[in-house]
Length: 193
Ligand SMILES: Cc1cc2nc3c(=O)[nH]c(=O)nc-3n(C[C@H](O)[C@H](O)[C@H](O)COP(=O)(O)O)c2cc1C
Image (cartoon, rainbow, N blue to C red):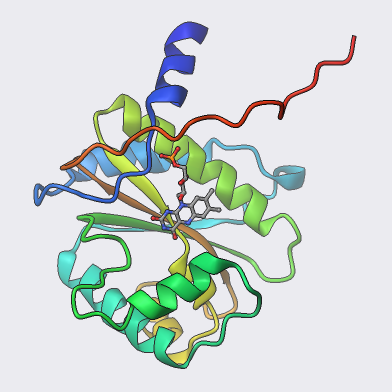
């Protein structure tokens, strides 16, 4: 059992090219079940997972993200932020690489474990997705643009409370092009006996 789980952990990759094929609702429901069984600080379970299987809705979010990036000023020098802002100007930009399913994880405001809880839930989703033959990818742009007015107005219509912080999101779909496993950095684990 542990060997099987370790294999799944090692096999999971961030997918950035998805098939057109839709993700069945039953599969999404399983992924959400995995999410809500993640640990949470003081057992808060204050997260909200909004799963979107509707391409038009995902494309609408993409349009709002592209628009939001135009006026967004990154609050630090993390290169991926500059890169995303720049590439969002391209006509072919799609924030979740046209994934047919998206799960947005949000959480209550002013809760210091909001990101940690949602990230642990997302990893549950990623690993279960891998075991089900689905690809997945952590998508940061909804988090970066969490204070963007038009985006939040639209997310509100999808049931995401205005006061919630958008923590993270997951693109889900069948893998069109497998990603190459990045090499592991060495010397990052110590065992003290
Ligand atoms: C906090 C976090 C944010 C990430 N944001 C993005 C993102 O916005 N877009 C993306 O394509 N990948 C994103 N990733 C995926 C990483 O790029 C990926 O995990 C890393 O390159 C290692 O590849 P692997 O997941 O295939 O092992 C993110 C991963 C983490 C943990």
